Image (cartoon, rainbow, N blue to C red):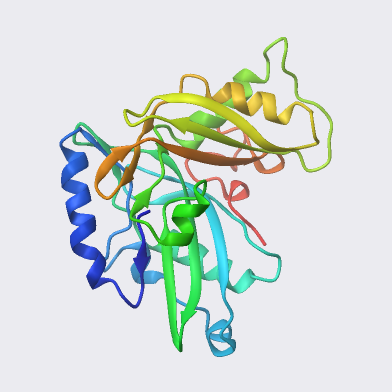
Length: 263
C-alpha cells in the first residue's frame, strides 16, 4: 500500500523511494502519491468539524490518473454521514497531482483504486491514503502495498463497455441503480488471470456479465509490495447510471463532470 500519513510523512519517504527504483528496473512504475508541494497529500486535510469531534472515516475512491498526474473521473464512496470527509478528499484529488504511472519511461494513463483513512492516534489526527481497495488485510495493517493498476484511460474503458454491450449474448437491460463490482486477479507480470463479479444490481442481471467481459484482454501494472512486483487484486466499481459515452454530447470529453462523484 502506498500509504502517506499527513502528520508523519518523513519515515515513509525512504521506503517509497526504494520501491520506485525497484519497479523502474522492470520498466513499469505505478501511479503514486508523493510528498511534494503539489501532491495530493499536500492538499489533503482533516475536516475541521470532524477533527474537533474526533470523528473517523474510511473513504474508498476510484479514478483515472492521467499521464500528466492529474486525477479524472472520480468516484468516492463511504458512509452517507461522511460527506465532509469525501469533500476534503475530492478537493485534494482535484487540486493535487499524482506521480504518473510509466511504462518504459513513458507516462501513461491508468485506472486506480484507493482508500483515504481519517483516524486519531491518541489526540493526533492522522490522514492515510492507500492506493488499495481490494485487499482489506493490507489496508488494516498499513502495509507498504499498491494494488494493480489498469493500463487504460476511463474513456477507453467506457468505449469498450459500450462495445461489449452489443454482444449478442449480453444486452443492456432495465433495473434500478444498475451497477457492478469486479475484482481481477493479476499476476506479478501484470497479466490478468481471473475476474469475478462480487456484487451487481440488479442481481443476476446484465451489469456483471458486461463488466466481466470488458475486463478481457486488459493489461495492468502489477501490484507492488515493499518495492517488489507481486500478484494482487484490482477492484473496480462501475455505476452505469453515471457512465456516459465519451464520444457523444457537448458535456463529454476529457473531463466529464457527470462521471465524477456528486453528493
